Image (cartoon, rainbow, N blue to C red; front, side, top):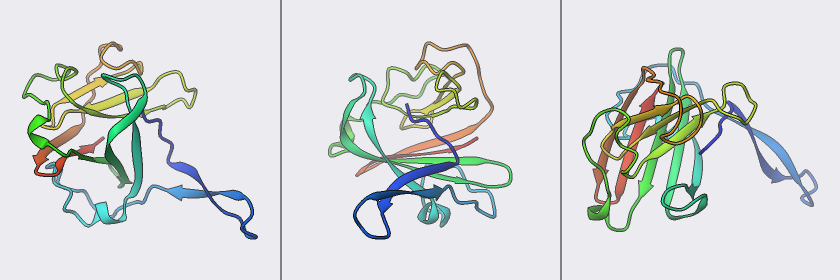
Length: 169
C-alpha cells in the first residue's frame, strides 16, 4: 500500500554536498479535468509527480516488485488524479478480468492508500485492475476492509509494454 500526503520529502544533496537534506516535492495542480480512459496521453502526466512503486503485496507480502511500476500524481480544483504505468515483459500473462466492483482482488491490480487522518492506521484504498475494474475499502486492508463503495472514476488498458491505469477521485 502506498500512503500519500500532498507534501512529500525526498533526499537531496546538501549545500556543501556532504549530507542529504529534505527537499519538498509537491503534487502539481492542473488547470482542467482529464479524460479518464486509461491512456496516459494528456500533457498533465508529463508534469505529474512520479514515484516508483517498488513493493508487491500479493502474491508476495511487501517484497521487492519483480517489474517496474510508476505512480503519477496530480490534482485539480475538483479531483485528485492518480495514474500507474506497470511495465510487463510479457503482457500476454497479465491476469485481469471484467468483473463487478470489488470482485477484482484475484487479478493483478494497483492501489493507492490515502491516510486521511494521518495516523498510519487506516484510511481509504482505491485499487484498479488492468481493465479498469475498481475495488475500494475504508479500513486499509486489501479486499477485507469495511464495505464501502466510493464514487470515483477509473480506466485501464493493456498495451504491448504492460498496462496503464487512470484514477480520478
